[in-house]
Image (cartoon, rainbow, N blue to C red):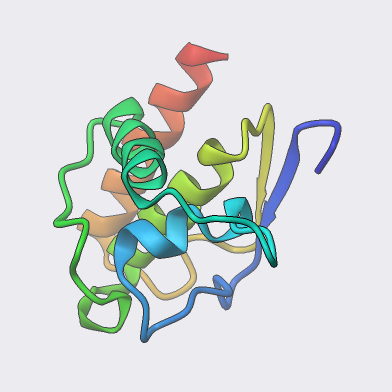
Length: 113
């Protein structure tokens, strides 16, 4: 992680009972420190905007499709300044259209790096 490497596993490791923005910035929470919600929401907004995704920040992750959950996981990696993202079988449970959407996001990320 310190070298900018993030892994997104097939099970995505998201918290279904938390909102999208909290899942994106979960690794920014530090035990015992004051949580600055506004700043953390802005980090989540920037991560979503960086891949041109518009999701309602306050929606619970459990309400999302698997494809949208993958986008949240990608945004979590981006919010941690990932320079290399490794995905474990990202299209295993996606429809053809969802795979095309994921590939579009990957192409966008490739162009940024």
